[in-house]
Image 1 (cartoon, rainbow, N blue to C red):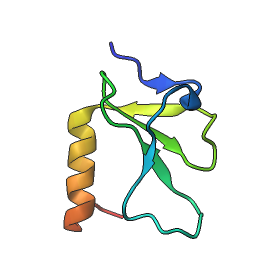
Image 2: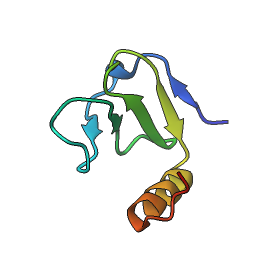
Image 3: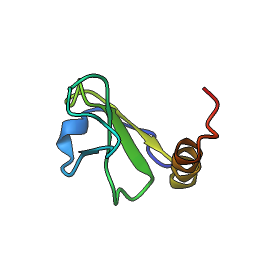
Length: 73
């Protein structure tokens, strides 16, 4: 089974915030592209904390749902 968490997310370079995030700080998630076992996601307020690794197909479904306004919330 692929690794599902990264204990110290700051050990990886290339984190980015969503283009939908505002510039006012606040609560944001950051993602990392090109990770071999999925999409790492971390809390921008805790960059040295852990990151979750989401399977690529699940992340794609999530992003598509959010962009399409069909994500239940």
